[in-house]
Structure formats: C-alpha cells, structure tokens
Length: 92
Image (cartoon, rainbow, N blue to C red; front, top):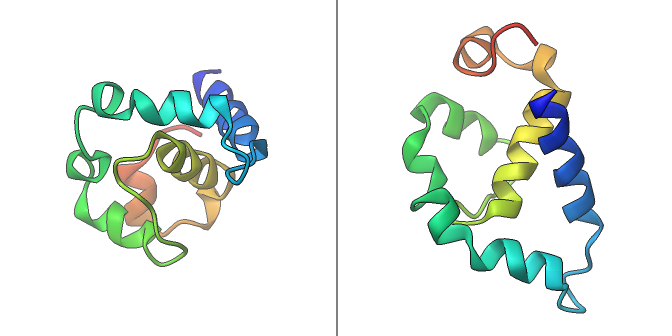
C-alpha cells in the first residue's frame, strides 16, 4: 500500500511541467535537504546505485528523482538482477 502511494506520487510529480516553474515541484525540492537528510545515494547500497545508473542519470539531492527510482524499480522489479531484488523490497 505504501509503495503504491509513492508510485502514484511519482506519477503525479512527473506530470508537472519543469519549464513553467511548478509550485509542486518547487515545494518538494525546497524541502529536499530536510526530507532526505543529504544525498539519498549515500544511504543505499553501491550495487543498487550502480544498477540505477545504467538507465538514466539521477540527481541524488532530488526528491523527484528518488520518487522516480522507487517507481521504476517497483514497476520493473521482476526484471532486476537477483542481487538487486534482494537489496530492494522483499515480497513484492
């Protein structure tokens, strides 16, 4: 249930237009330092970070990018290498 909320939140955030200067995007990124406590990649396993780097570049201080990673890994969980599945959520 919680992962579904995060996936849905990520989908909503992706709809926001970066060019116009969305209040929603500005708001979530303005709290990034407090919400994330620093760069989120520093709290994850190096193998996981290496795996996500194969598909796109992420800003490790961005709430939006963290939500995107969680959504993408949830949606493609069964396609992940076994070692990354073990590092990720159990029982999805």
